[in-house]
Image (cartoon, rainbow, N blue to C red; front, side, top):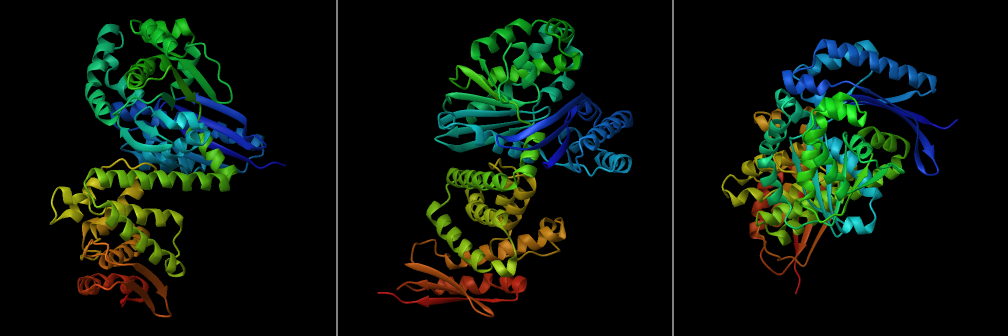
Length: 507
């Protein structure tokens, strides 16, 4: 019997179940069920989810679990996004769902959701689309925007604007159609300014995904083939003109769609109409992939999913280097520090037991450690901490950003301490990880204290009780030895291994 996996996804306006299995053509979805339930309306309007909505959600989840049992599915994953994540009573809701259904609900942040779906979408793009594209993931509460150029993500931006969130803000205007459209347009003016600064040249392709895309495709009479649909720019524009002066009730009746879908349709179309103006695309290409599809793929094709993750981390490193360059950091110095960091990391693998994800986080910390100097060189570690926490770094979620920021905060002479808020606020395992990475970064920074390319070669070897870093140069290393003495203490405290710096003279 083929292995089957079920995924329950709780979004802002619906609950969905997908059951899939492996096939020669990828994931074969053998069951897909959705139930409309606008939990996001509770969260965005009242700040928390009502227990009446909770009761409905629990019944839907129980129904999903019955379907899974009928298919003989034993592995069921469950994920929740914006509506539950931003609810003030999130902990109580999660507790009741666990008690009533037995399901452990994994609440992911917005960046995790977008990263997961984006990896799938990127894997499907041909070379032509990767050459120049604006990719947009339109969520109920948030939007993620990616600019692709020559096969690389050159910039990314997450914006806390979404169709359901906007419809909740201005629901009192829905019956006054012209006012409703106008107030949304005016509300989006700052969004337009942000996009103008973000997208510096018009990409040739416009690629979208999101909850409202299926509805838009249906209204444009576009057929979906292999989870992909193409809407001509003219058809999309015609749809916008056709509905912009109609109430949700009339739209629902004319296009035979649920009224709750029609209510959030206008904000979605207005947002997309703003974005397409920043492209030269003749068509909108839509991929019908959700977080549930991504999770099915990750569960059924773990090796391929890991490969996609590694490729995506490459975009993260490029993104960080672009940010560093933007803030006038010395890229050649960053590369030297990074190379030394990675040599130490690889030699210490048996002692730190960390993997590829943590190796990338170390690279990102090395790349971003000096961005605060553009504001103030004296407190640049703390300044960089706050900057990093508010950056959009391709492929990096909020928890990872926090780790990177804290490592950077301590990259100088100050050592992590439980008496410091930034450190003590972390969970114990994360504190240990921060210290492990920070101790390595400190050593690499000490080795390259002068910021000059003064070493012909840097070598790292590990003996029984010493990590020996050897630099080959004919020049003095007094500055490096002094800095090494100050910064190497944390390494010995974390690993119980002494780090030493040696010089090998060269002609």
